Length: 274
Length: 247
Image (cartoon, rainbow over all chains, first blue to last red; front, side, top):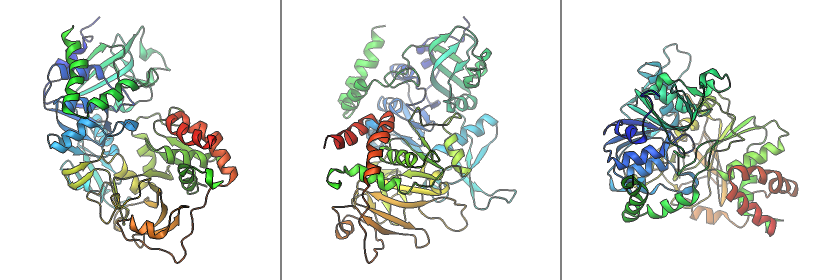
């Protein structure tokens, strides 16, 4: 086993304070186990990038004081309603929010994966989002075919992409299936840290059926095996969200004291018991 | 029949009527009523309407990650989409960001999602917001997540078609940059709509009542469509169609 493989705690140590960290939404691959390790190690001043939104993972990190800046198209807990710790931080003015829109976030990452400075995007003109973004501007089609201004979105280069995936092999290849936003995230980031539900006994790239949905190991800096690593949100094709836990979280996270109790029970106490 | 009609069923049938004849309708996350409407329109289309529902394992055709829906829209491959808003104003601007002076919002909403983009690119965007109050339907939104209208120099192939609420249907006239009251749901009236709407709009001399679904549509909705909706929105399907069956 190479030094590629490590522990969840080591992954959290290797995401420095102040890092720009790209994360997937709750329905994709969330390394919730590493998010809890980040909280446990007292991470600070993180710049989270929701690709294109964040959910419970973002809410928990914000609530625990790990986040200085949130760059996202939305914070959504879907059917569970408003995100309580995000709402509290927005109201208190303690969080810098960089409001975006889904396709601009995807496009910014695509620019980074191509090594180019920006990506033109249609739409957006006339939105107040544009007036508040100093990393977006407008330009015209130099070939003169498409009339009207295009929005030029500056490349988004995360320091770290942090994801959870169903499978990884011993060469660091990571299977994500059709959740290919995670492929773009891995291409765009300086480093990609992965937790995997299970280790695949073989080469994911050697199987024609699996290879197209596989992030090659060349993009992956470190990997930890973590069964149930997306809990309490779900992992596509594997398990659904832990509905009872999430409802309990929402109930408790409505107040500072309730959220502190949740942190004690599910982050600090398990850590202390190790 | 209308005595048994759930309010959601009327809204679903109304929205579905705006989708008949289209090729491809996409539905965003957490949109049970628009999603049901799209599935109803598909059931009536004899297989010619494609429905792409985010959050559904069986009705999502995309294999290239989160960006594919947006790429599809920019190419003109999506005919209709649905948007809502914490605030919607009389020029069909929508606000998904917050109330107050941005960035110091007094009330924060979830964020703009893909609205700033899709509103300009999808030909038939149906605004859907069940809550019809002067709090939501305002004279001017505090933040424009996505603009209802654009100047002529902006490349725009899409925009608002109608606004469907729990009380009525407004049609949007892009040339006049205004809504007009198109129909009022049974049990509501034009004066009440005026009282609960914060923006100005046109009213025809005769305001029709929103058409209720016929027996064949209801049968389809409560049978096949209810089953399909339940895959993505089990709680919604049980509440609406389960209750309707028992009534």
